[in-house]
Length: 193
Ligand code: ADP
Image 1: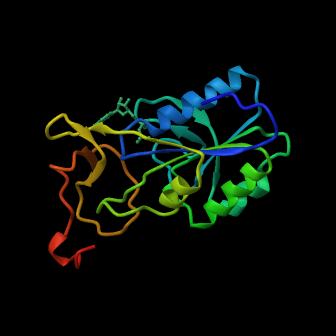
Image 2 (image 1 turned 180 degrees about the vertical axis):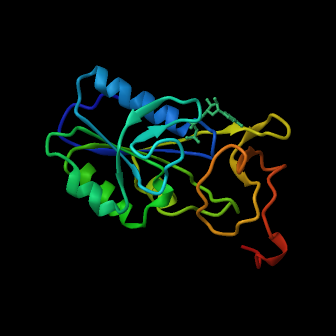
């Protein structure tokens, strides 16, 4: 990202399927901000206890301590006036209110970096992430590796039978797939959506 001098804040979105390195990229940006001695606060949704309830953790086991919250409003309430970078991981689990909260923080002059899935297990837009992509100044869409053929993968294949939009899990429950090998669960019942 460019170095911006002045008081304007902005929003960065890091999106893509599971295993595409969103958390790694978020952690990389946070570490660079910390090297620049910026004040950073890191949030994640309380639902994501994948490896650690109090940290953001990548599949490659990098981690940073974070604050677990269950609603976007709680982020706003806990951000310190002096914080320069607000990071949010697993944004897809939050309500649409996350968009207004990120806008508010950027308008206050903060750099807001949000990572999350853009598509759910059926390939549909997921939670507030697509709208955040529209509102963001910077969008990075990452790709994983298709576990069937090795091509770049933009989709997350659920390997279990659950039909809930949210089913928290990682390796064994989900894998990355390219568009050729991504299979929409219950495609025949989906009514074309
Ligand atoms: P995300 O936050 O997008 O789920 P992470 O940052 O947690 O991704 O993890 C990315 C890491 O996952 C990669 O660096 C790699 O070590 C590992 N990985 C496991 N499966 C895959 C895959 N199919 N494609 C790419 N990376 C994978």
